[in-house]
Length: 210
Length: 210
DNA sequence: GTCTATAGTCAGATAGAC
DNA sequence: GTCTATCTGACTATAGAC
Image (tube, rainbow over all chains, first blue to last red; front, side):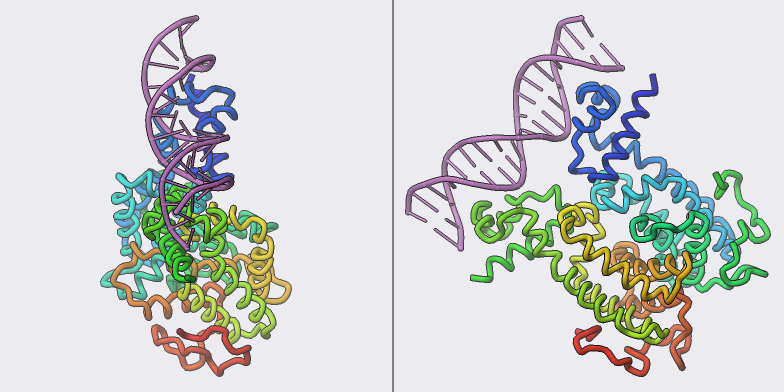
């Protein structure tokens, strides 16, 4: 049964988000699933492996997206598209992102072996966003644009009564403002952002709405 | 000797930042200072109390700043000034902010009793930045502007070779862009941001450069 | 103020029966 | 696949001598 594995992952993610990775014990997770610690060890060889399997989809998604994005031409339209795709992917892994925000240190520590690859990808995307021969401020703007999307997502407690659509639209808009991208053709202030202006060529599967 | 207390705080902060709060043991901290665990307990009654005393300056600074800022008129100049003061305070507590980013969950858990006050302050500032009768997007922008400053500060590993001045200037500029504040009078793109345009009236001690 | 010693707890992990 | 039983180790915290 693949079922138990998934139940374990789901329970662990929920507890990690609520309590933190370090504090959550394997016994708690096992209890929640209705099995014992020992059984849990049958499915995952260690606590770290469990965390890895939880965060992996986000990392993989980010690496895949990064690889495809840096191959695009550095036009404002493509940059806006890239940020939108990035936002979309993050929203698709909302719980994992929350965990990453909550326990950034712990998660990164577990991913230490792989973390260089991820950092490299982030840096590539950052440089792609910053444009050719970027200045210091250009690079800062690129990084802030990326962070913008990630951070505010987890500010749920500070932004109640905000619709998902407003969040999506406004975050993309804010990230573009940081990058000083010109507004999309025909887009009025506050108007809903078109999915992709003139649909830039990109491999299928990237940035698709769920 | 007040000295030992400070040494303990410094050692603890350093270890917390590097390894995380949960993982760092009091024995490690004591070893680093050159005393024993038991002696440490003479100065701080618990691990939580130690963490509290470390993070407290940031919380206090934030609350003080928040209280003064929300009393100001909601003009673009004052908003820019407020963001600058906020940025300044955060830079003044850089290591603590890094810890907060790294172990957000753990830190918030320890501050659970006080956390409501802090959240209330943040919410007040957020609403002040968002302007009177703010829409959902207005509130999101306000929050993102605040987050912008906090986040990118801790992205040191992703932004090496960036000067402190560039960081300060660009982050303030990015936060203003998110809020859609008009550029300061006479300020060219990329030009250094004047400390405060036309020095708005504010209680002394706020936003002072160190 | 600092030490040694220790209580008390619970974590992650393994072995082996079923 | 799941269980019981158990090991090892480390942690926070306290008591009391110096």
